[in-house]
Amino acid sequence: MENWLFASGEILGKVVLSIVAIFTIIIIITRISGLRTFAKMSSFDFASTIAIGSILASIVLNSNQSITKGAIALGGIILFQSVFSYCKRNYEWFNNLFTNKPMLLMENGEFILQNLRKTNVDPKDIYAKLREANVKDKSEILAVVLESTGDISVLHKSKDIGLAKEILTGVQKQQD
Image (cartoon, rainbow, N blue to C red; front, side, top):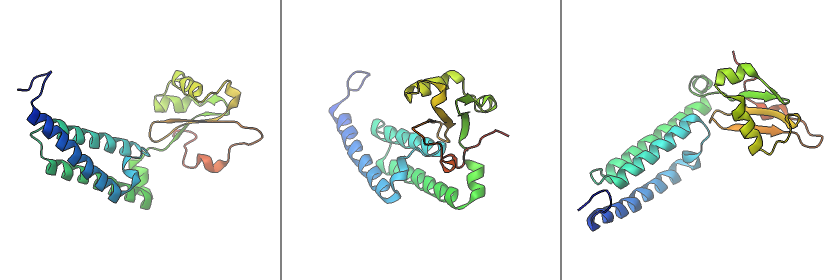
């Protein structure tokens, strides 16, 4: 008998077998498709990772779902992600249409207020990231970038070394 506290041995056995089977399948698919499968390089990669986790949970916890159906769903998502990544790398128009560009939120210790408004980021959020990055004074900041993944990168000064222009490749300085 299954209820909110207990499950039968048969159901628990199915859960264990489902875990072994579906994780074996995901390892095989990941080995074929490459390490990018779980990289959070873009918002699409992040969404794919969430979808994969949802499928894994559904297969493991729902005894009415088949492992074959789960394997096909996983393979489909990862195939779509691979095609998407290929198109992003090889077609500039595709990349421009479907990916967010990183946005410069601070430069040389000063907020770019227009970019903060456009990206819906509050200065308090930036201050939290600055503390995480061990920034003690705004004069230490070369740049703060809202990455296409939603992460915030903090670039701060080091002895006599400025910021190389190529580090900000693809970053929008001013929002249109």
